[in-house]
Image (tube, rainbow, N blue to C red; front, side, top):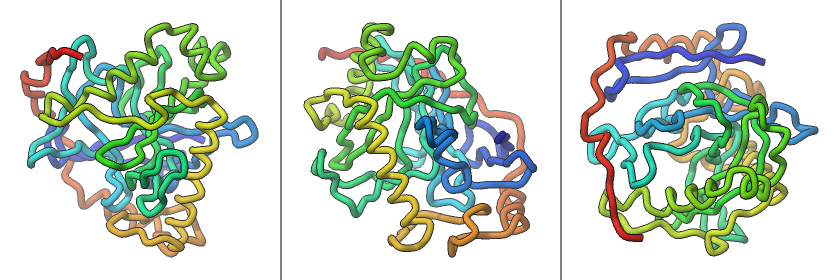
Length: 288
């Protein structure tokens, strides 16, 4: 199963979009049409890379737009870039999401005591390769961190690309601790402090900021996959989410290939990129 992307609009502007296509060249939704599982028997999942490692642009699946392309998040009407909080530069992993998952904002998690954040579940790929924007990778799940983001449960699942030359050595969260010393501590530090330059307080965590193991993480992903099933079949109120899809034939949101193509063709033509503001390179320092 292979996927490709088609860029529309001008990179580093508000009209920039990354649409997805399947192996037949048909337009699809990365949220709804890419299977969660790459190999269900072995608990191997697909992951969509939204933000390549070391970059700052806060790209994300546009959950409220038709076909859910990637677009850059906005903050106060401007393109959002994540600040560099010393010693970190941009994102310190390939950051993205697992398709066909949904953190239900109506469901209070029994472990965290908070409801979901209304997005697909997030992943941090710790593999060596710096992936490209919109790349679809197959990942092994190693564990998870439970971020509480402004009162909502926002799971951060630690994964490794199955094609990584070291993937066989990583099977649980303790392997990360042993083989990549300092990486989990840096991950916790990154998520705790990344909003401080924007004038917000440090983020909070469930479980006192402890990483949960592989089995816990897989259980969490599977529960969010079930929430997605309820969403796509209209058993749950979608609210502002756009569930347009081209592959879930029994979904009331199913659309034709022609309808999908119309969505993409209505987007701006691909053009030259704007420069990234020099302010994005600034490093922020503050006492822990």
